[in-house]
Image (cartoon, rainbow, N blue to C red; front, side):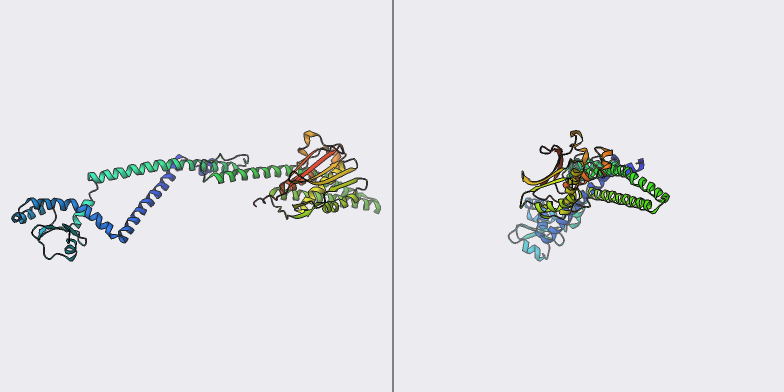
Length: 453
């Protein structure tokens, strides 16, 4: 992959900080917007809270004014009123008339009250006299706009420090997510370059854990499919050469034949080669479908004894010189796809007929909580060092001997693939009874979950 694509897939540190800043501002902005909305809602639904704030704000001013009047003789109150009005910077009026209804009501049983309409305080003095302080709305607005006052500055600094601390905590959390994202992007880049052995590093966060594990499963499956595809392509191209070469040679012989009998013989040979080629292609396609996961099992309870007898009958007719033995317990059942499992068992029995010495034994029984099918023969057996390789597609233990007896080395591979599809296992060892090979197909009692498409 070229460098520009790499830069797009794997952002650098500047991009990391830019994205963090963008989302951080969104989070903090949303947080402050929420505070504003909650404050506005509370003020509308519960106006007494706002009135309480106003009283707390004016309590100090009203207390100072009251103290001045109480220290001064009543005959000097008019002069004191003028002096206080100049010093405080907002109107202070002695014995205003008339008092608004809210002030008269608020002063009942209290020393002072507030008229919220114009933010005015009314103070009750001895001798049934009253002082009006305000209106204060403009003065309060002016004080709230003094952002550089010591109190406001301290609040702003505290808020800034809180945002920085929150950002540091959030960035630590964000970095873990970023590392997980970069790990997945790096792996995706390697996949795009054809490096299917790559795996993402373990996720550091719970959020990306399932995604990372899904990547690993996907990569493993892709790697298996690609390896299988490559092996299939190489082997199939090799296997196709033989029937195609025979077809070409047969056509030449057919055209050069001198009489009808020779033409008939060559024609029959051509038909046989075409049938062989068709079987090879069909078997290869079946294998490919199973490897891609396109095959879905139609499971149903199957009684094994009559099913095995029916499956072996045509093979007995095709190999009259071979002695077949079928031993299955009455009533033994399994939940399987009869067609798919039949193909697997048929391939095992056919393999035993080809390479056995004339005796084939098929048995089915329940053991260790599973259904176990065995196919044994009295042939030369299979060397221990290749007992796993014989399940690879197109593998031949003896290429010349296998070709002389037919087949392409896909039968055992298909048998294992079908067994795995059922959630079971297929293995081979030496037959203790007949001395040849023994294939053991084990199926679990409980049907495993079907893989996702």
